[in-house]
Image (tube, rainbow, N blue to C red; front, side, top):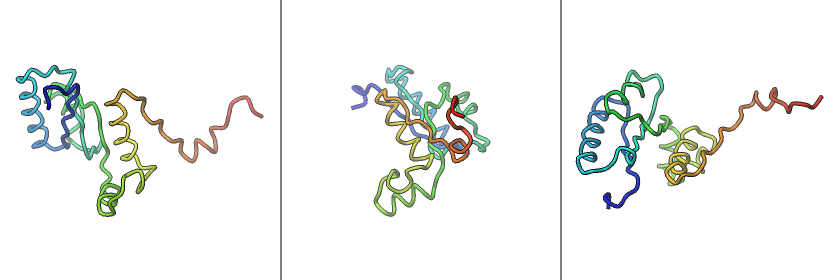
Length: 130
């Protein structure tokens, strides 16, 4: 099935063992003849404060992460335990938007725009109105 795929998404987390495993899988995919532009790396449970940064991952693997899905254990575990989607459990969560945007990107659709925060709504009024 992978030989007819037009995109391959490799999912890894931000730990050394996962990055090493991703590197081995990328090597296998390339040896099988998959072009680099068909391989997409998704970093799941992404934490910007991690010592295993996106830059380090990119340097180690030779390809930059295409997607990140933030770590939101509460929302994800709630959805799993309740048998609901992230959209149903946490529609405004960053993880929900990130997962939706991965799917949209894979189908060449535009990303869902970020929602404006409370202060943007209060102080970001329309220009030209007085």
